Image (spheres, rainbow, N blue to C red):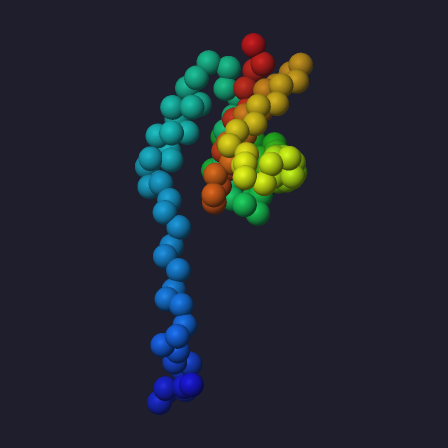
Length: 120
C-alpha cells in the first residue's frame, strides 16, 4: 500500500522497527581504553565491529588492519568450535600467548575488544 505521496505505508501487521543496539557512550569507551592502556605490559588496544572493521585503536595503521582482519577471523572460528562442542555454550574470552606477545580477545554482541601485551 502507498500513501498520497507515493510512499510505502507500513502494514499494521509489520513488526515495529528494531531498537538501536545499546552501546557505551563515547567517553566511557575512551576512559576504558585509557585505563586498559595504562596497565603495565599493554602494547595496544583494538576494538573491531563484527565485520572486522576497526572502530578504535592505539596501534599503528598497518598493525591495526592486520590484527583486525586476523583476530576477527580467529574469533569467528573459535566461536564456531565452542558451539560445535556444545551448542548451549558461547565464547566469552580467549587468551593466546606466544613467545613475543599475548593477545586477549573479548567478543561481545556488536564489538570485539583485542588487547596486545607482553607475555611476561
